[in-house]
Length: 117
Ligand code: SF4
Image (cartoon, rainbow, N blue to C red; front, side, top):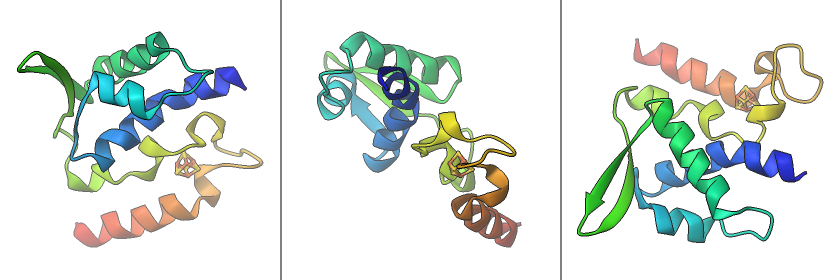
C-alpha cells in the first residue's frame, strides 16, 4: 500500500502541475500531497524523476524553487490520460483490471488526437 502511494506520486505530481497552470512551488506540492505515509523526500524524488524524464524544469523565482511543466509535448500530449492516471502502475497490456486496450479514457483521447491530425 505504501509502495503504491510512492509509485503513484509521479502521476499525482504531474496532475497537480496540469491543474495549477503548469507551475508550482516545491513546498506547495509537498503541502498539497501531505500524507502521513508520504515523506517529503519521496515527493522530491517524484519531482526529480519527472525532471529526469525531461517533463519539467526547475526555476528559482525570488528565492522560491518552482517546477514548471515543459511544453515539449504539445497540447494533445498534455491531455494524455495516462500521465496523470491513478492506475498507471497497475495498467498493462492484457491487464485484468486496467489495460490500454480496455480504457475508455485512452480511447477518448485517441479519438480527439486523430481529429486534430
Ligand atoms: S490506459 Fe487508461 S487506465 Fe491505463 S494508464 Fe492510461 S489512462 Fe490509466
